[in-house]
Amino acid sequence: MSARPMQKYAGSCHCGAVRFEIETDFPELTMCDCSICSKKNALMVKVHESQFRLIAGEEALTEYQFHTKTARHFFCKVCGIYPFHRKRVTPDNLGINVHCLEGFDPAGIPVRQAVGAAMT
Image (tube, rainbow, N blue to C red; front, side, top):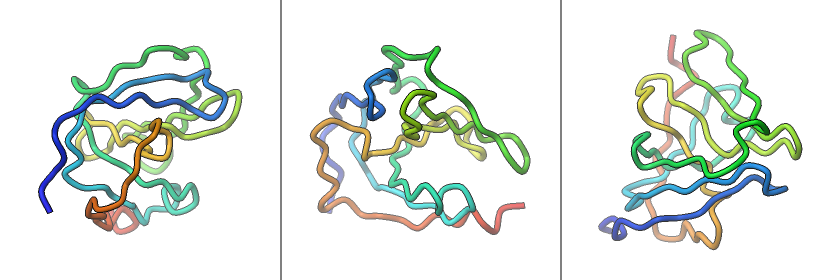
């Protein structure tokens, strides 16, 4: 199956304090097996930082880092939802939690299992 056309998507945390938009064609989605990703059970799409725009809520974000402290995981301080993270291996890219995108249906998009637990 080919990727979707490049489109803009609006996203937010549960309470709406953090709002953002991305532009992507959804070539694939990823699920990571590292300790934090498996616990938050996020389904992610990777976008370059130039395809991401934080519209509101920078002050509502809190950051969590662990292990090498390279990846930057962001959560809403108000509702606790994880909307995105800055990736460890490709820090100029973000992993966007597609469950935070408005009206997005992941049906038909291939899901790749990322092997994060084995990263040293």
